[in-house]
Amino acid sequence: MSNFVQRLLMSTLMGVLFCTVIYLSHEPLFQPLFVLVLAAVIAAALWEYYKIAKARGHEPVETIGIFGSIVYLYALYLTMGQATLVEWPMIVIGLTLFSAFVFYFFSGISPLVNLAVTVFGIIYLTIPLSSMLLINIDYGRYWMLYLILVTKATDIGAYFAGKQLGRHKLAPVISPKKTWEGAVASLISSVAVGWAALWPC
Image (cartoon, rainbow, N blue to C red; front, top):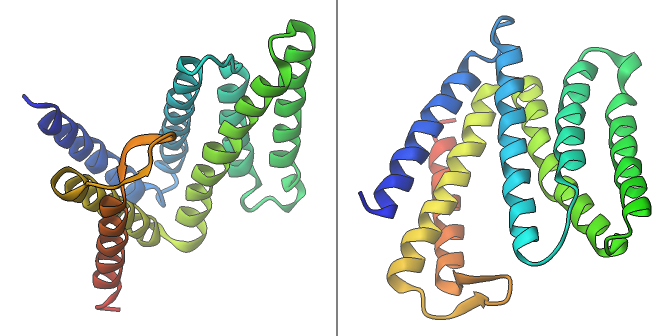
C-alpha cells in the first residue's frame, strides 16, 4: 500500500474509534475510558514533539513532560464538579515545571534552551488538547465531534491542495512541505465543513 493509503486507513480507524469513545463518554461507565484515550493522545503527541526536538539536537526531558501532562489531565478531570479541587491542575503544572527545572539545574545540559523546549511542548500540546475534556463534558459530545470534523477537514484540504497545487512555500524553515495554496485550501475547507455542519441548526 502507498503511504497515502496507509495514512488514510489508520486515520479512518483511529477516527472511528475516537468518535465511538466520545459518543459513549457521557455514560458514567465509559467516561474514564474517554479520559484514558485522551491521555494516550496527549502522550503520543508529546512523544512525537520531543522526538522532533531531539532530531534537531535538543535534549528535552520527555519523561517529566509526558508524565506531568497525564497527571494534569487527570487532575483536570477530578476538578469537574469538585470546586474544592480547582487548584489541582495548576499545582500539577507548577510541580512539573519545577521538576524539569531541577533536572536541568543538576544535569547542566543546555538548561535554558532544553527547559524552554520541554515547557513549550506542555503549552503547545498538553493544555490545548486537555481542553477537549472540558468541551466534551461541559458542552456536549456533539460539539466535540464538531471540533474533530472541522479539524480533519482542515488537514484534508491542506493535504490535497498542497499535493496538487502547492507551489509557494509557507514557512520553509519550520515546515518545508507546507505551502500557501495548502493553507488557503485548509481555511476554505474548514469554514465550509463547519458551516455545513451547523446549517441544519
